[in-house]
Structures are given as C-alpha cells and as structure tokens.
Amino acid sequence: MKPLVLITAPVQTRSGYGNHSRDVCQALIESDKYDVRIQAVRWGSTPLNALNNDNKSHQEIQKRILRTPNLEKQPDVHLHIVIPNEFQPIAKKNIGMTAGIETTIPPAEWIEGCNRMDLNIFTSEFSRDGFVNTHFDKLDKNTKQPIGQVKLEKPTEVLFEGADTNIYKQTKVFSDDIQKQFNKIKEDFCFLFVGHWLQGGLGEDRKDIGMLLKVFYNTFKNTKNPPALILKTSGANFSIIDRNEITKKIDMVKNTFKDVKLPNVYLLHGELSDDEMNQLYNHPKVKAHITFTHGEGFGRPLLEASLSGKPVIAPISTGQADFLNSDYTVELPHEMTKVSPNAFPKDYITPESMWSTVNYGISGRIMLDVFNNYPKYLVKGKKAMLVNSQTFTHEEMKNKLVNIVDKMLVDVPKKVELKLPNLSNSDKLKLPKLKKG
Image 1 (cartoon, rainbow, N blue to C red):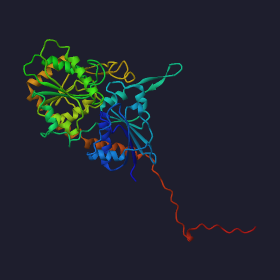
Image 2: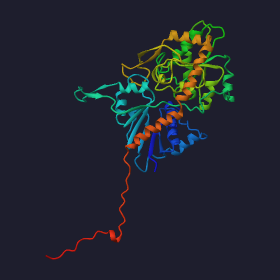
Image 3: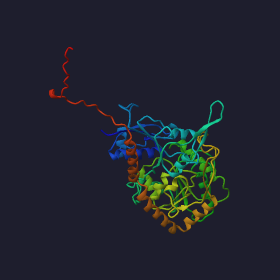
Image 4: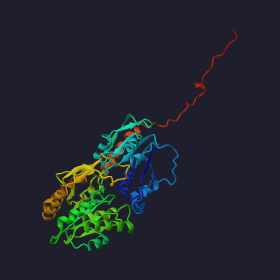
C-alpha cells in the first residue's frame, strides 16, 4: 500500500504560490510512489481558475482534490504550502513549504509556525537564511520580561522552483492572439517586466515597478527612436477595476515629467497560459527582461524568462541570487535598505527588516548601454539559458523533493497486523494431569 500524502495548498489559484503548489503536486503524482490527496485552499483574492481541463497534469491534480475535508485515516506525510503562521501538523510527519518573506527578518509568528512542523522547506537560500538567523525575545505575558527566545528549532531544506523545460524554451511559434498584441507595438526593441504591482507608493512596492517606470522614462526621454517598456502586470486579479488602477499608477509616474517627449510604455493586463507566457518571453520585439525587484522568495518569472536566451537585467540579491550569476546576468548594483512600512501588512515586518534597492542612476545607464550595445549582452542571455535549462528544471526539483519525502517516511510508524499461528493438533499445548496428593 502506498503511503498517504496530503498536500494542503492553493493549487487552484493564479498566484506564485499556486504555481509552486501545482509543481509540487505534479512532481509527487508523477513519481507514482504515494497516494496523493489534495486539500485546496484560497490565496487572498486571486482567481481560482488556474487548473486547465485540457492539461493532463492539471487533470491528475483535480482527481485528487478532496471534496470534503475528510480522510479515511491519518496521513503519513502532510505538506502544507502556505505562509508559515498557518502551518498545521496533522499527519504522522509534517513538512512546511514556503517562499518565506522577501525581507531579511520574518515575523516571530512565522518562526513559531515553522517550529510546529518536523521539517521546513524554503525556495531559496535567502529565504531560509532569514528564518535561521532571526531570534526574538520571548516575553512573559504578565511581566513582559524575557523568558527565552523564539528561534527556528526544526530542520530545514532548500528546494528551488523548477521550470518546465517542455514549455519554457526558445520558440519561433506565436499564436494569433500574441501576434495581435505585438502588432500594437511599433517599437522593435522592448524591455519586458513581468510581476504583480503590489501595495506601497513610489519606490515602496515590492517589485519596485514605479521606480522602474520612472528610470525608464528618464533614461529615454527626448530620445529619437527609443525602445519601449512592456509591463505584464496586475494587482490581485485581472478585473477592469484592477486594470484601471494599474493605468492610474502608470499615469501618476508619467505625469511627473513635463514638457518632454517620453518613450512608450505598454500595459499587458490579463490571463496568459504558460505557453503564451513563453511566447511573450520569446517574441522578437522583446530584447531583454528587466526587474528592479526589492525582494523575492525565489523569482520564478525571471528563471522562466532566462530560458528564452534573452539577457536578464536584475539585481543579484534575495531569492533570485540562487539562479542568477554575474557571469551571465546583466547585474544592477544594489544595497540593502530598510523596508517601507507601506509595503506589507503591518504584522509582516519589523522596523529592522531590510531588502534590496538598486542604484537607480547606474541602472538607467545600464539600460541605455543594453539598448545601444545589444549584441554583447545577448551572449550573457545565451549562457544563462544553457546553465538554467540544465540545473533549475522541474525534473531536478522533482528528484530532490521525492528524496526528501522518502527520508521523512523512513521514521513513520508502520501499521503492523497481528497474525496468530495456526495450531495443529500435535502443536496444541498439553497440560499435565494433576493427581490428588
């Protein structure tokens, strides 16, 4: 009988955690070593329509989603893929899986959540280091005096988010819809950014899209035949209201420039399949991928974009540093700075939390040089594609994950059936005859 493995995760959602969850489910199902069941949960207000009925891997996931929160027995292993304060140990062995937080210091409640599990898996070295290196004083509820420390006491592993190289790869095939979108773009040289535009003012949102936009405008203002910037972005969803809010944010940055001719910025807002995203990365008008991101738990879109062979322009910091290397990345210089309190919900950060901020002046000059001297940077893009397509793949991730789960199962108590021997007449115990004394 196969070990029962329960995965609690936002597998139905269009979110970074949703992508990660589906990869984990797919990997364990493909191994065919476990009886996989899935408890689907929400992820904020993100859409719940990520599972595609025509996708075989998604079909296998849908088969295993529990319709009621009941199982016939206690799971052997529980994988809980959420933020750590929600971790719940309900199986014989319990694994918490998280990208953590994109700053140097996680909340104390998240560390306490990790300590409820038998093992915690992080998506990057940066994410794990934040949990391992953070200690908080534990205070007495009445006296408020220190009575100990809150620190991570359970074992950890780092497991990257592998890219599916059957999907993310170089291609020259583009759908009519993708071509239709690019026909609206007159420029032949475009920088592409992919990611959510999250809370916070200019310079405060986690992906730092506002400052990317401002630096782009400032770098190429009044330029004859300038490049364009494509923003594949949204807030929490793909609604008309969300699109209008993103448009307002773009206009707010644009309106800070007066009496100058600005380069074009194109907003791509809406749902794209994995295959369509790969086409976006590969389109001939997209010449480079760019981000000013303050912090990543891993940075999956950057990994997938790198498989197009185009140069990646990014800070080598936080989670993406695991798969970006200065030998094949167009590196943006950065420094660690204090996190704005407007960037996260108030319970998520401490005043000491740090994240990465690029040098905006130098970053603008780098963008200009990539535009003017593109061939030399294209070499870096080819190197990144060759390295990452061999190392950071779904297959490599699956192999490591299966090994981790198998090690956990070694210590799981096995159910033992009591079997009594069949006794023949000759085997029956003969009691001695007792005589009266």
